[in-house]
Image (cartoon, rainbow, N blue to C red; front, top):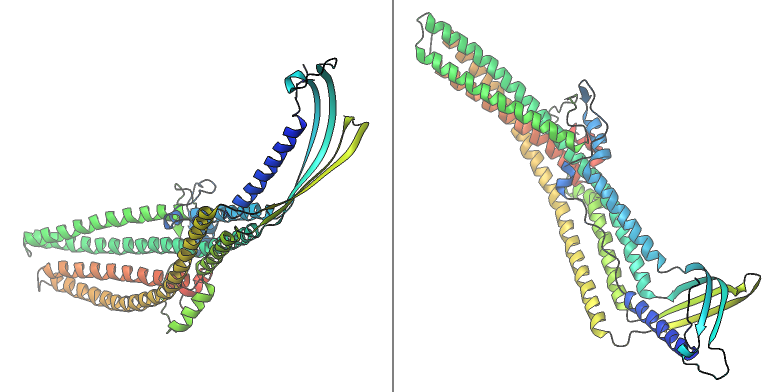
Length: 477
């Protein structure tokens, strides 16, 4: 059954056409100053602790160097992946805003069959047929819409372009954060392994002392108290060893997550982090380097520029918008009996009674600009603080490492002497127990201070925006 499309009477059709064009011009003026959606928030610090597992676990254990771990992290870390999606979203917003400045061309083809009831349209002519049709026509038509002058849309596009640049810089900064996160996790596992090895050595030493105390007690040359004291020391160290081994396994899982390694994959760390002292560093030169290289600071500069463009777009919303609309097509009873037609219209839209909406939009854009400026100022101060904090941490940790090395040597010498005195019957094993505790304390302090020292050097690389050159900092300078 043919569709029945009843055309509007001529005068009413022209009136509705004028209303539609007026509404289109008003809508163009109203939407011209709406700023583009903000760039999605960057990944949080917690995002860099996770990762997307890559591949499957192999049967045997693999060797994992620091370089391997960081390269895996740059591919599979969740923070780097979310940074990529943030950049893709900003790119899409830029393209959407660009389209508002370009002509929009559409094509449509229409095949219609109509039958009109004249009395229903208000035409009652005696002797004239009441039904016209059925008749049909074919219409092939291309139409174009183009905002020729729209300053607000231009400003919004420039803001979207700045947001896209900010997202790209944030993605580059995310690589430095991955280096810091993975490097920290790697160094923590190294510290755990050193701690486990240290406690295992202490357990072995305590076992020797225990065997010696048991033998002396059975020989009647030492009281039962010496044996009990040695046994308590030995069992306390066994508990410490269990806790250290558990911490090692958990930190290895955290490292595997950060680099996208299957959690059931066994691995051994092939790199070590020996003590490598830093030369004296010029804080002012490093702060200048950080301000030039930090990508997160550069990203905030772009965000501030985007906010400034959005503020200008809100002001430009008061300006006239000039648009052009045109269509050209071929219409007729059939394609063989058709004729070309063209229609062109230009519109000028000026907001007349929108003061509160325009003022509110301007105030909102100004608030966003003020926020961006404040965040940029804070980030500039934070960059300097990051460098100074890292330098203070390096200096303090370097001194702690040196003191811990001396303490370890002294504690081991004291333990050796106490064991010899007890073996020769000069004293009881209380001095041995105290010396073992001193060794354990000195070893723990050395492991902790060395870990803090190497992490501080990684933090300095991050503070300078030179995370990709981490080797130069971790290995000394």
